[in-house]
Image 1 (cartoon, rainbow, N blue to C red):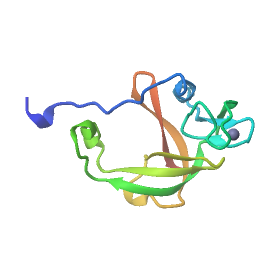
Image 2 (image 1 turned 45 degrees about the horizontal axis):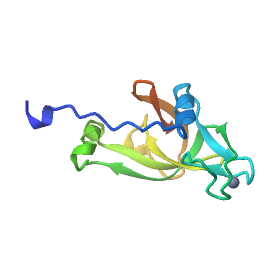
Image 3 (image 1 turned 180 degrees about the vertical axis):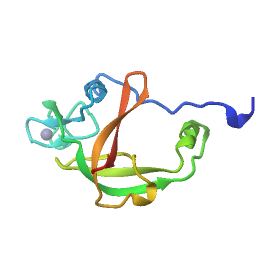
Image 4 (image 1 turned 90 degrees about the horizontal axis):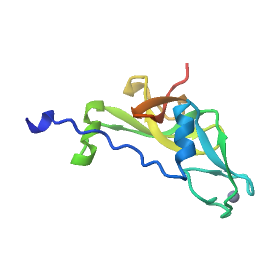
Length: 143
Ligand SMILES: [Zn+2]
């Protein structure tokens, strides 16, 4: 078998007790994040304690999934064996999305030509199945 024809899967997220509620919600089409009951901060990525005040009183809370592109880059090449699974997606957009509630999440912008992606573009979350029962939040332009 030729080197280029070998199928290399994309790496999948490691689901831990801390992140499990996030992945369960994503599988149900809901974007949730931790919200601190003590200082009212959003905590993203999932953690066992609040990054602002150290409280462990974190509540998984659904967010709107509505946001705007804060920054983005177009991936045109993958380097290294571990990332080769992404080669078939090239070119694709990796972006920081500012959610209406405040948190900033790194994801992909999908569902539009890459030349249409712009800073400040309004986007909505969509979920793409990346593996059995694993759904990744991605963002498409708001219609
Ligand atoms: Zn806090």
